[in-house]
Length: 426
Ligand code: NIG
Ligand code: FE
Image: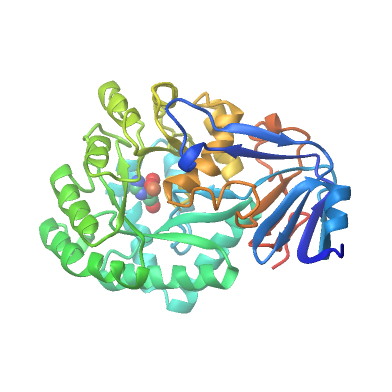
């Protein structure tokens, strides 16, 4: 038998780790997706952007004739990370505001001083398409270098119909250019912009009548999200926005209970949202409700660290009560300036008490399931997308143990080598 041509053969793996999220791609209540560990010497054959085979190196070398080989050099191989909550469509940074926070001002005080989300909104509105495109591309590449091969990404720093749609168009173009699959989310309801401060309902009318319908068209957005918070959108306005989005065929994701227990998680469950994210102020009762529902608990454990906030999401309570979960970065310029899922995993383990298997599942197969990508992303099996990360670590417990350095050696994105020895290779 002649070997079949393939695009890539990954060899030299210390181990290949993947988790099985169970039938239908979703975990059963309170079950950690089973970690299967294929031993050292397991190779992966890739063709047409998909995994073709996983198995002993000698066997795959006989069956496949690769155009290119990639040596893992003993690193262990995991599915490409799936970041299910990011805000990469922004310009510049807000490092001056970080300095204010370090001096003791909190998130809400900084917003009152003219920092916060609205500072990023001003920057984005002034930016040309070319400038914004360059910034988004740079942010996606930073994520990729840290092992993120697909993600959810929100608009939310435009806050006019025009700038929100422009954000989504540029996001789509930048993602396509890199070959990265991005699930776009319309976050026109991030905050009420300054020009509508005295008439929030007028802004909401615009979102419901123009923004959401335009975003739903042509798949410019797959989901809609709202920031339910005292200084952002209240429950009544949030409900109106989410119901309109649902009517237009958009999936729902919600920023809920970050600072105040407003009832956002309860609303997310009621409306059948894919996830309720943040949850640092979630009540015990609502944790029970969320845990009993199919709505994912979106854990963003680097955010309270970055905001010097003491409270964490009650992750142990949620997981032990049977909630579905994912671990994401919340990469954004204000409340969590890291593009690194390994860093988020560090905080998920250290601050939330997740086991390494829970954290890894939360950044791979479960994150994918929250986006409707179960079985295709966040898993290593024949037929799945060929998104892989080779980690420069001797064992899985090292993931999140090391912090402040990038553990990613190689990244394979859709069957192409995108990062080699820590350097971009696209
Ligand atoms: O997810 N919570 C609202 N939005 C972002 C913060 C955005 C910003 O400060 O720029 C978040 O934390
Ligand atoms: Fe967020």
